[in-house]
Structures are given as structure tokens and as C-alpha cells.
Length: 273
Image 1 (cartoon, rainbow, N blue to C red):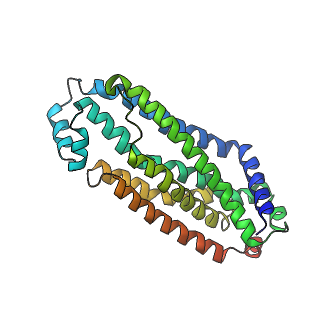
Image 2 (tube, helix red, strand yellow):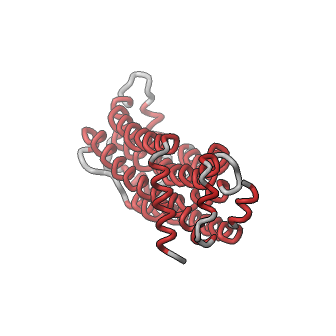
Image 3 (cartoon, rainbow, N blue to C red):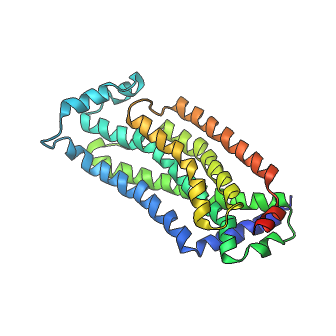
């Protein structure tokens, strides 16, 4: 493969994305809300909420007592307020973090072909002297690299927001733990690859950016389910479970990308366009 051609496609797409308000606004606003504002609010207001007159402390203690033994051992030295902060900011927010790579990769990759069609620039791209593989890989990297960049920046911002807001209660830096490190450096790249592969495949087969984004956003559904089952106490993300989750996501991503490479043909895109 021609690396210079691939890099040229990546630079071109990133420049186009940086000029699109419809793409850039979600990439800025969503991380700020999820990774800065929400953890800051929880870390600051949650300790005070346990002292509200309408809060049943017994129910909170019973809920925390039903957690797995490994979590109870971790919480043993914490007060009730500290336990709630650790539970919310370390465990409940962990699945939500995967929204970052999925959202960024699907937004950018959905714009990769469908957006080109809307801007009337697809024909010039299709007829560039690159192979189908080079074009496909260039489009994939155009979504994967920003997804990883936004995810890593969001991870740093989340850690700063969580530790600063919870410092009056925790009195030490509690974030990140080992599970979060596995989540960020093992699961997140796979989630970005999964969202990116789905979005590129969909984007090359539909006519508008909105269609591509809506269809490719289906990959977020498993993350929503993971948030729900953890909120219900069915499972809690541990290091081992997070590693296993990453394996599943990577298998799905590789299968989807393999299928994309096998089926991607620029002449079919031209025929549909």
C-alpha cells in the first residue's frame, strides 16, 4: 500500500472535519458534558445528598452491601459518602466512557462518504490514483485517529474533574484504577475500530450524512445495555471483565473490518451515486 496516498486521504478528511460545524460541535460538547460537567457535579453534590432529609441511609447501605466481595473489600475503609463517590465515578461512569470513541468514530466516518456525496466532492475522491484498499484504510484512519485523540483527552479531563470535585470528601487521588487503565488502553481502541468500521460501511451505502450517522449509531446500543445491567447490579466491571469485554469488542471490530475490506468497491459506490 502507498502510505503517502493513505496519509493524504487522512489529512484531507481531517481538514474537512475541522471545518464542519455539524461534526465538530458534538465532538466538543458531548465530551465536555459527560467527562467534565457530570463528574464534577457528582463529586461535588453527592456527599451533600446523603445528608438530605428525604434520603434513606439504610437503603443506601443495603445497596452497597449487595455488591461483590471484591468491591466491598475496596470500600471497607471508606465512609458512606466516599463509597458512593467511588461507586459512581469509578464504576457507573466506566461504560459511559466508551461512548467517546464510538461517537467520534461514527460521526467522522459517517461523514467520510455520505458527507462527500452531499458536498459533491465524492467523484474527485473516487477517481484519485489510489487502490480500493488504500482508500478504505485512509477513511478508517480518518475516523480512528481522532476517536483515540478525543478519548485520551477526555480520560485526562475526566480524571482531573473527578479528583478535584471529590477531593474535599476523598482527601486523596482515587482515579484512575487498574480497571480504567484497561478500559482506556485496551477496550477504547477496539470500540473506536468497531464504530469506525460500521460507519464507513454504512456511509458508503447511503446518500446523506444523517442516514449514515443514525444507522451506524446502532453500535452504541450494547454500551447502553452495559450501563443498565451495571446500574441494576447484575454485573460490575472488574479488570478481568473489562479485559474480556475488550476481547469481544476487538473480535467484532476485526470481523467488521474484514468484511468491509472484502466488500468495499469504489465502482459500486460510483454506481449508487
